[in-house]
Image 1 (tube, rainbow, N blue to C red):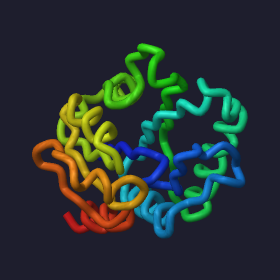
Image 2 (image 1 turned 60 degrees about the vertical axis):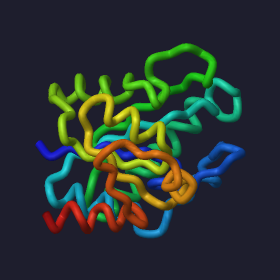
Image 3 (image 1 turned 180 degrees about the horizontal axis):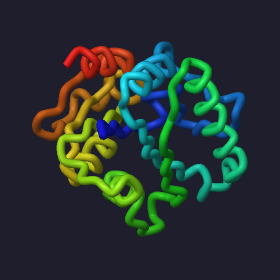
Length: 177
């Protein structure tokens, strides 16, 4: 199995400091849906690991989040691909959970779901915490410059981090190798 783990906000869809709170506010980034579909059609298993503290903050409901994810899955399916798994942390930053990135809980859930080791699995994020969570489980970090990626690029990145303009460029790279 060729598995890839993606962050959501800032990688697949537009991010917002005010949170993505509704289906109307959930807007895919240019080329992102196509990139996921291309990877899926090429045999990649697509997993998403996303912090969604807006739930804990009361900004949106679980039903709203599920509607966003159903829309994402539908858009990818319309292009002949599929999103195989979505895991999210519903907790706030001070809740003390083990699933909020940079902690590795979401990645542990993904590994358990697929009964696999995450060593060398590509993980794509736009923030340092996305990359740190993956690296802690042995993933290979890919930074995209969309979302918060430009700001993140100026930070001290995990060893071996590869940087790409966006998710489409990551897909191009992975499909060439």
